[in-house]
Amino acid sequence: MTFNVNHPILFIIVGAIITLVLAQSFYFLFKALRRAKQLGIAKETVKKTISSSAIFTVAPAVAILVGIVALSKSLGLALPWLRLSVIGSLSYETIAAKNTLGTALGTTVTDPSVYISIAWVMTISIAAGLVLVPFLTKKIHKGVNSIGMKDKKWGETLNNAMFLGMISAFVGYVFCDVGLVIKGDLSGFIPVCVMLVSAVVMVICGVLSSKLKARWITDYALPLSLVTGMASAIPFTMLLGGN
Image (cartoon, rainbow, N blue to C red; front, side, top):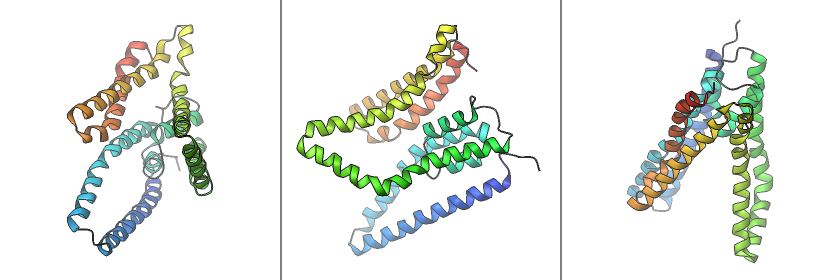
């Protein structure tokens, strides 16, 4: 049987896993509704909370959809659908798949061993957090709070440093091909230009949200900046000669 990244059996397996996750979500929803009734919370408040949460879930869902489309060319729909629907990150999944593949995404994977390797890398690496969180989160949280109580300014500095450290890993990936410019290849500037476009859109959304007092703009800032950045990659690629 010829290997196919969109084989029906893959969709059956992925569909079963996602159905299980959805079942858990509905279980906790019903538990929350029952608990709200016990606490005497008004039905109008509960309905408003559910509806507003459902509406604002659309914002990150747009970013997830973009990620699935971006990865589907090489990996089909089933694996990206699974990875970005349960526990996943667009930036992480893309980097993991590209590094495992060894080349830029865009060509459909036809070797089952390569496909399995990509699936393992995308899954095991991100799952490490699930294993570490129960054992380390409490200790880390306690340590950070202890530092903050002793010196509030130093505590804030430490939190900002950890956040910037995490971001720097992805920023480094953006600039890793800039050195190609020395060889006359300007394509290394494409990720940088895309990042700048996304950053500008994010800043604009922040300013508009502040000026117009519209919180919904902030909620949609991430998918808007993501989609705009990806769209800008097309003219940048044509202009700078990337593939």
